[in-house]
Length: 267
Image 1 (cartoon, helix red, strand yellow):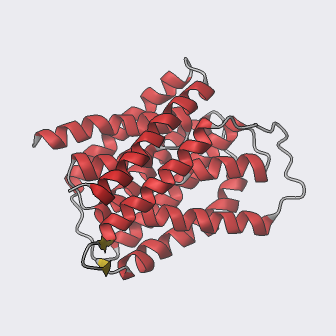
Image 2: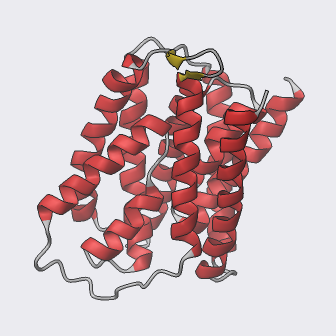
Image 3: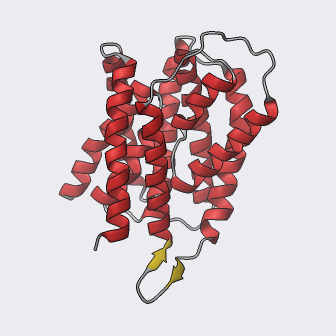
């Protein structure tokens, strides 16, 4: 086993820790680790990320369900449009994107670069949401839910998640809080199940395509991430959620800017 792989597997623990502490953000770490540390091509890395985040979130979601912190009605409400969109994105849209999108004498935009830049933009948007204090609504009433708005949000989340290989928890949690008035703790548990379903279904789109999967690497990385989610759950009980969210948000912001600079100006 190469040193880079060992480092990648160790860092995978932090992927799970992030999910355990925040209920989101795992893919923000997994894709850069897979690409920059383990040397996996970005399109394949987004596929791997979907499996890792899906499996890890499922374990975390089951743990939350045992604590009665999952609203399964809202899992279905968001999950159905999101899952369908992720699958279509991975199975049809992503494979249709050409390897070289356009080229001039001074610049060539490749598919791999586009994916990483879009991912970096998603990271920056995510970081702003994490850094900015969020007003949590405690009213869990489901009266006057705007189902059309929720469905549109689910489709957008699925499109973004499918393209960049992200679980989308950083988008799902605010949507649950603002559109369905879900308490924060239940929003985290509900988000984990939505992330799990959409990520694993999205990964199925890659399996049914022509992707060649290194299952040994993927399983070890996933097991390390699952181990991390239990560590994250322990840490989250000892540190204030807002401090964790804000600190991680600044880290994600720096990483997003770094990826853009590296992809556009790096060698």
